[in-house]
Length: 182
Image (cartoon, rainbow, N blue to C red; front, top):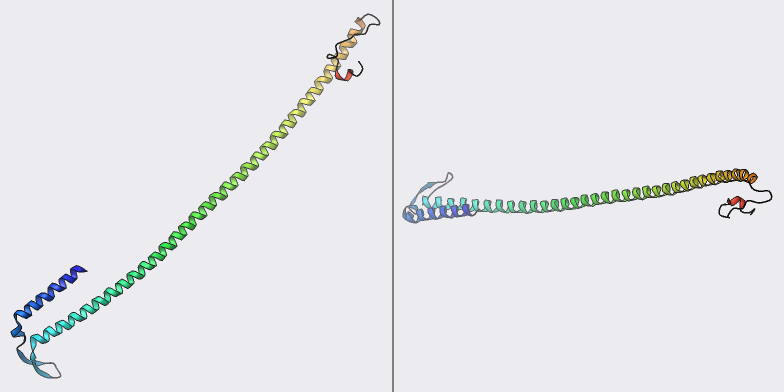
């Protein structure tokens, strides 16, 4: 913009210098025909006047164009800022949605983990109960069979004992079912 302004000022100075050097010829009156009327006037002065009017029209048109461009630029800048703000809000909204998605996903994983750990603990407790029951059954079966073996052994040992003598065993060796008899 400044280069055009400088170029315009240089052109105006050159025309003004040319007019100053030839001022006597420019102001010499001649007969001029304007189509509707004829008059005596200096041709150079009329041409310089028309050049001045053209220059003023050019400057006004240039100023209007520049003002229009500036107002358009300001409007575009405002629209761009609105779009930029809208994009930032949408981007923030996307980040918020992404965070909510991650939070939901983490919450679901925690719930799933809690459910799995609760189920695992329940299964472990049930397995311990089952194992304890099996061990009790095995203990009971073994105790029963040992009791049977002891009674068989006692039955076989009693005929070997002298008559009238009762075979006594320490209380620890007596089965629990027979302790009440002792």
